[in-house]
Length: 299
Length: 305
Image (cartoon, rainbow over all chains, first blue to last red; front, side):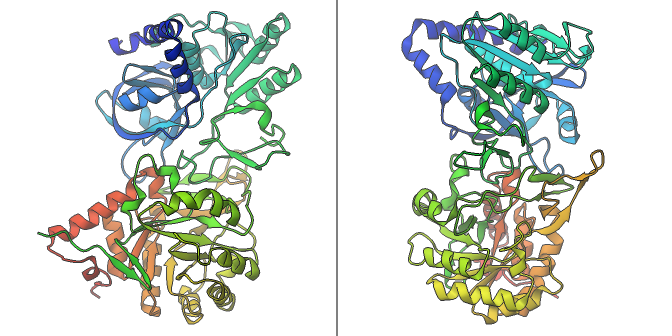
C-alpha cells in the first residue's frame, strides 16, 4: 500500500482537533460543509493509486490541491475516463475522502466507463471537474448521526463519517453478498467499523440494512439524524422509516448526468407535489436532498 | 505575424469570433462561469425560453449513445419573466453577444416571447427554435412544414427589433425547402442542425431508455449529417448560416466554416470538456496563424469542389 492512503484518519483527526480548539476554524469547517456549489475546478489530475478492494470494486486517489481544499462530504466530481469521443460523457463519482492534496473515490465496475477507469495506473492523467453539487449538512450537536449505506453508497458516507468524527455516530452498511463488502482498514481508513448486514447472511446481520436501522431506532431515546446513500429501493425504505418516526433524513442520489453543473437539466428528480418547482436537479440542487422534499412515489 | 482577424458578420450581428455555444448545452451562461470566461466567445445562445416556465419531461432525460447522447429534456426553462429577472442581469455583464433562444406552443406565444424581449438591452439577437423534437407542440411541428415555419418567422419579426435567427430541424425530407421559406419570410440568418430524433431500448426491461420514448441525438455521431445539411442550405439561400452538430475540435469547426457557415455553435462538447469552445477558438486561430491567413473570412465558404 502506498503511504499516501494511510493517513486519511489522521488528517481527519487533525481537522477535528482544530475544530475543538478554535471556534473560528469550526465555523470555517461548517462553511466548508455548507459552502455554495460555485467553487469548482477543471483540471488534468494525476492518478496516485487505483486498486481493487472488493469484488469489482476499486479505490482510486488522484491529485488536485484546489479540489481537495474545497471538497465537502456528499459532493462529487465528473471524470472523463479517456480522451476521444467514445465514451463521450464524463462520469459522476462521489468523493469518498480527502487526504492532503489527494481526492479519493470508491467505485464499482458497472459499465464501459468504470471498466476503463479500473485500468488506470499511477501517473495516468485524468480530466476531472469538481467539486460539484450540494453536500451533506452537518447535524446539530444534540442529534445523533446515523449513517445508512447500501453497497457503493458507502463512499460519501465514509467522507461524512470522517468529517463529522462524532463518537456517538452509528454507521450501518448493507451489502448483497460478502465478496462485495468494502474492507475499510486496507483503505487506510482506521477507526471506522460499520455494523454490517448482508442479504445472504454471510456476514453480519442476515437481511437488509434497513432492518439494522429499525432496530437502532427502536431502542433510541435521543434525537437523531439520518444520512443515507445507496440503491433507490433502499433509499425509499430509509426515507419511509425516517418520515414515519419524524427523523430528519438527508439522502444522496445518483443519476445519469451530462454536464454536472446545472446546464443540461438532464438529471431531473421529482419534488413533492406542492413544491414551487416540479423537478429538482441532482447535480445542482443535490446530490444530497432533504428526503421530505422528494416525491418518493414517483422516484 | 499579426493576430489573425477572427471577427465575422452574421447578417446585422457582428461577432468578435465565429465560435458560440449552442442552446441547451450551456445553461444561462453562469453555470460554467467559475471555470471559463464566456466573454472570450463570439456569443452564447442561452437555453430556450418560453412564455411561461416549463417543467420539462420526466426522467430519465438523457442517455449516452455511441459517440453521442440522446436527450429529452423537454425544454425545461425558467420562462420569460424568470429569465428577465434572474438570468439576464448576469448575462448583461458579459462582453459577448447573448442570443436568446425562444419557442412557443402557439404562434401567439412565439410572438409574446419575442415582444417580451423587444428593446431589452444585453440581448443581441433571437434564435427561434422551430425544431425541438422533444415537446409535442411548439417544437418540431413548427419546423417541418414550410408554410408554418414561415408563419412563425413572420410573427417573431413583427414583434421584435432584434436580428432573427431561425434554428432548423434535420428531421425533414428536404431542409432546403424549409430554409427558403424562412428566408422568404424575412429571417436574418439560419442556424442548423438541431438534434436528430433517435431512440434506444433497455433490452432487460424492454422499455425505452428515455422516459419520453424518443429523444434528440447530438454529439460527434451526427457531425457528417450536420455538415452535409449545412452545405446544402448554404447553397440554397442568401442569408448567413450558423453551423452546428457534433463539433468537438477546431478541425470540426473549420469543416463547417469551409462549407460556408459564417459561425459555428458548440453544444454537446461542452459536457465532455467545459472549455471546448475556447479550445476550438484557440485552434482556429492557430490554424490561421500557421498558414499565414489574415482573416477567418478567407476560410468561410472556401470549399473547393
